[in-house]
Length: 495
Ligand code: NAD
Image (cartoon, rainbow, N blue to C red; front, side):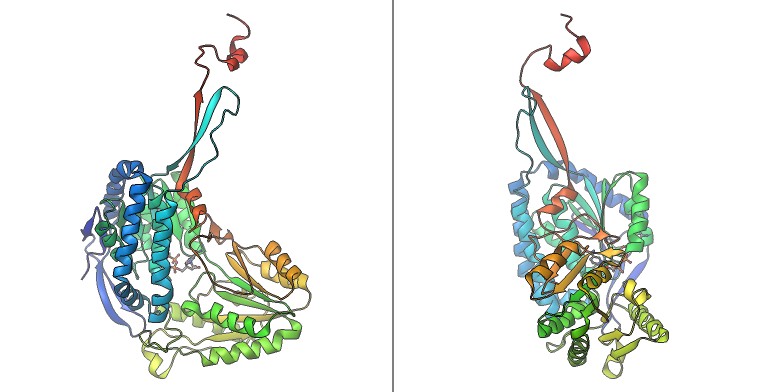
């Protein structure tokens, strides 16, 4: 049994008396049992973060950088433990945890250790000739961060690192079903010398702990990654306190294949881009639009690859994709596919939950859906599973228009060997990230964040400092005169 929360440098059992079982979705076994935080536990965490703010915000950037470098080393030393725990609470294959989630998170820590020493502003100058102006980039204060379950460790790091590197303190609420690696990070922050109270974690439900955190008057900024409907609620709650809000929300990434594309590359890219993390990825390829001459060959090729994917035990090295996060998510995905089937869609491969050896977990088979219309829910709504819909298009204009026909705008890709088509696509597709001839790769140095109902603000990269710092203009008189030149507007020429 775990305390569930980590506040002020120590585990914290909390006061609700309620527990949550953390379930391995590969076999529905109980991995751990955590105490759930109440609203008063959140209040305690926020006060602790507030108390830690002054010292941490004034720590020299080099001091913050060396603590973050120590955190990177500490996490690297425990990386296999992180891999095992991340896999057990999500069901993602060990291979994915080992090659993506954990090293990606550690790389992020290293990046922000360096970036914390490079906060930039406009050059100082005497813009009006008689004052020296300088720009200070100051931390916002206490950040309430809320993370989802799909990449629990990476999302916790994306929320925590730019905030803490810029001198803020945080209270992080991971998804209540996947809190374990966030708690490990909080422990490692202490071991790395990040002062108690700078990083606090509360394990609690969205309705209780999440809403208490977002609404707390001592929380200066809310940083949320999760679904669009919950993001809307978070924004409403933050409005009362005029809090700064950063929202990383849902996605429904288009994957546009022009008729000159390298077909094999597009097929491989679609399978990898749609199935990563069992499709539970906000940037996953979900809507493939394929120009008519390649349409059939693309469908056949992706269907062959989907059918060859090994769905299975996450602990097995030969497994390509594991289960979905929960029975509930399995039902959600299945519901979308069944409703599309009832509307007349064709299911080229998959289209069912796992059977046989897979029946004991939240498995769903890689699925291709065709014969759909652009306005169907399976094309327009995020279902967050291993399901790719494929639609044909004729003209380039139509392909781009279909890609943009979505309330979301998180990520997209275009596949072509024609430089001008590629340039057009990167300019005209409305998304926070457009890949050309690939789909999914991310790097710590580049921003991640959406357009439209995918939210606003950036994670990763130095652009994230725009969210987690506020700009102060300092203006200093350099004349030393009592009667300043601009006083003329008040005093006229009177002595
Ligand atoms: P979710 O919105 O259900 O939950 C996200 C977090 O919000 C959880 O911690 C949850 O407990 C909390 N929450 C729920 N209700 C709340 C409330 N009323 N007030 C405050 N907090 C509340 O999302 P999920 O199902 O955990 O994750 C999947 C979603 O996350 C997908 O929509 C996916 O696209 C999105 N996502 C987006 C990004 C991105 O960078 N844009 C990255 C990963 C996941």
